[in-house]
Image: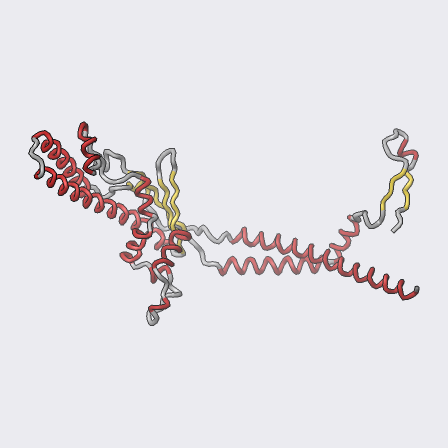
Length: 311
C-alpha cells in the first residue's frame, strides 16, 4: 500500500517543532473509537462469557472442601528445664566414653525427629490415622488397594503439617490443616505429646546404656581416680534419667495449645469468584478481537480473489 504524505498545517508549525511532512497509513493507526465500538457492539457476548466464568468459579469454590488450620505454639525446653547436667572437669572424659552432659537433643534434633518418616509412621499407627486420612480410598474388603504408609507420609508432610521456627525468639508454630477442625486440633496436640514422649524415652534408654557402659569400665580399671570420675558420670546419668522420668514436656513446652478453629483457611471463595470474573472478562475481550481479526482477514482474502479474477 502506497503511503500518502500528510502536510502539517503551517499554523501548527509556527514554532518549528513539527516536521514539514510525515507519513502514516491507515493500517498503522490504532483506531480507539473503532475498538470501543467493537467492544460495545459485543457487550452482550462479553457479559455472557464473564457471567459464565463467574458462575463456574463460584460453583467450584462452593464445591471445594473447606480446610481448617489448627495451630499450637511451642517453646524449646531450656537446658535447665530439660535436665542439663554440668559435668565440670568430667566433660572431656564424658565425651570420650560417649556420655553427653545435656538431657536430650536440641531444637534442631527435635524438629528433625518430628519430620522424620520413622516417627510419623509410628504416630500414624498409634493413632490409626490412615482410615481417616484416606477415608474415600480406604476399602476394608480390598487391603491391596489401600494407600500405603508412604502415601500417608507424603500427604501429611506436604499438605497437612507445617512448622515455622522464629529464629529470633526460638518459638515454634506448628499447624495442622484438615477438613475437620476438631480433628486438626486433636492431631496437633497429640503430635507434640507423642514427640515429647518419644524424645524422653530415647533419652532414658540412652542414659541407661551409658550407665551400663560406665559400670563395665569401672570393673575393668583398678585406678581409684578413674573409678571416682566414672562414678561421677554415673551419678550424672542417673540424675538425667530421674529428671526425664519426671518431666513430661521433655523436648518442647506447650505455650498455647491448639483449639478447633472456627474459620476455614481454604478455599478463599471471594478471591476465587473475583478471579473467575476477571479471567472471564479478559477471555471475552480477547475472543471478540480474535473473531474480528478473522472476519477482516476473510474479507481481505475475498477482495484479493475478486481482484485477481477481474484481471
